[in-house]
Length: 394
Image (tube, rainbow, N blue to C red):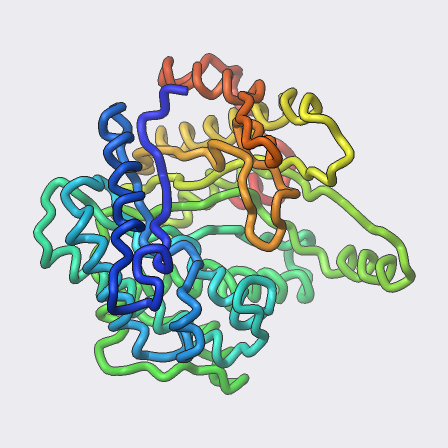
């Protein structure tokens, strides 16, 4: 396809099966072969240290809720940097840390717990571990590499601006259980007033040690943005859906696509959170649901994916024209893959994967995207300003 950079994640359990201690040399060898193959083909490696797969041996010791994990993670990060520091150009400490909250506080991801107080402590410990990993990276003196963090942003907007219920949902989605939790601590220092008040009222305030916020806010070289959509909160419509589901109805509705939200979000990063480092769009993609009732040909013809990615790229270009420093874009994903608790039902790939034979077949979007890479862009009509809450915000 001609990709110029490839983003992948190390697996902590593959390298340190017990989380600490003995290294699995076969695990290191796997990544050596991968990185060598990328380098031989002129592809820049973009490697993530942690993408949600905590070794089980550490979870039984309390996992991210145990402050000791800061030291456990530093040991793991040291193994990575000592073995791959000179070969990996772009390092990410954590991908989408909110997933740890989803697994510890909401029960949706591993380890499947629903303890919000525990989850709040886990996320604080994770952010401290991020800062310590950045410090370790600096100490290793790797002048040709850079390090950052990836935080996904699903920005919420009030479906009825000024409506108290909708605005409350927006505050919760953005600040209490969303991106503001991380961005405030990483770039502004400390937790926001809204989040601090919420945790105090609920009794969820984590144990914070002296110097933690200084550690968390250590300067990074870039910020990674995972973007898929903007979310319009309308409390009345949500109740209608819940009522239909409670009555036994099979209410399914594909969310509206709001590629224009990325323009608003890029401005927000710079103007609200003072992100003064280069930005990479580290994930962006379009989903097709596979319930097993359609042939491969159905998924190979995907003009809607092309349209969505084209729109996103145009809004990124517009933000760049405004002076926003965006350095790169990664499409999620190269291949249809295993999407966590959704298994194989969510197909994001530019290339179709037959999960029985493992055959890979390029989709129509793969050919289009390959040409975009080769041309470093595409000819397009001016983007239309849609009548949406998001554009109106801008």
